[in-house]
Length: 86
Image 1 (spheres, rainbow, N blue to C red):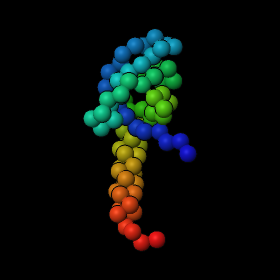
Image 2 (image 1 turned 180 degrees about the vertical axis):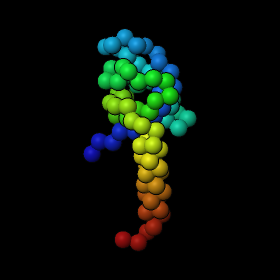
Image 3 (image 1 turned 90 degrees about the vertical axis):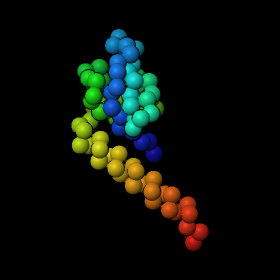
């Protein structure tokens, strides 16, 4: 299964069409990501990133909903790891 993570475009590094790159903020952790699939993205936009590549622009509400779901999964996974019952 592949999972994309939402992040906010913090700043553009390179706008060259083939080598486009931006710094993406994932809740305080910033990573350089390839932006060739979304050259129209602006600083402050949310993008869905998989394997270091921004695949599409998503709206803020969708990004926040996905972040909340991922946080919920993390909490459930943590509780399952603590529960020794089968």
